[in-house]
Image 1 (cartoon, rainbow, N blue to C red):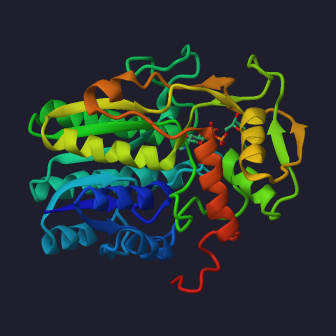
Image 2 (image 1 turned 180 degrees about the vertical axis):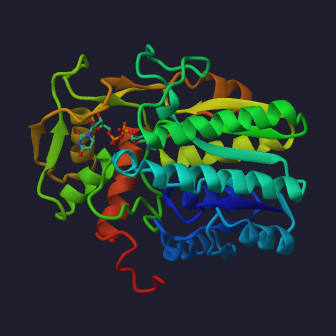
Length: 342
Ligand code: WQD
């Protein structure tokens, strides 16, 4: 029996492939490589010494999905595939609604056709309404403010309704906080296309000399040092959370949401300092205006995942910085210039 991982060539997807293979599952990946690289999967095979079967397909394409389910004995699915840039989603909402919603609806339909009813879904802390207090708990108010976050919220609602009407389904909704870091081998990591939107890849590209300086988006928030505070979680801890969620989904029914965070907030300037301390590299910065839509503080209460999934983040900010730097210095342009890339 195999696990289908959609978007498995991406940042979180590739790290999850490593952990699922290490846990003894066979892995099939469906990925259109729009925002990922086949090189990442080659390196997943190098790290695990196990094979990954890739179908280079668009998950919106039901015919392609049917081929995958026909050719393989699939037990369950982890669904990462989707566009994920907040800013881009504001400029191109219909691109996000079409892709993220249709791919999920197509996947659910084909899973039903093949009687596959266990799903782990890549959700996000962005589904929480902005006026919640911190730490965030899974029962708090939902309410996304950008089209990307709304696709995650809409998909959560679709999956809740699916499970309510079909008690033989089981869905784990994993709400990620801020995934950063890289596998300790330095072989796989975050490889954003163009200028990074997110903080850690921006910091690491300044450190490696690809970008001049960090723009700190606002220093007048109600936080320890005035800069935004987030719950950064090591991508390997996050990937291990998917292994635990899959085990839960395979032996339960119903739909349930879980925060995957550390429960600790770190500010922009604190992360910058931790990165410099961990790597010895300089990260010059300037204070810039606040970014629209940003909140002062976002961090999880991760107790439910610990209690129900028996999962808890183990790696700390220093690990995240050291592992990010090992990946970035060995791959200054990510997978773009790897000699064996596609
Ligand atoms: C973190 C902090 C910025 C860049 C986003 C998505 C969320 C999830 C994770 C997918 C904030 C500050 C950032 C920079 C900065 N993705 N910052 N200069 O916005 O918390 O979450 O990524 O699920 O859905 O919203 O992450 O890394 O963009 O920002 O000062 O160049 O760093 O203001 O305080 P965010 P981020």
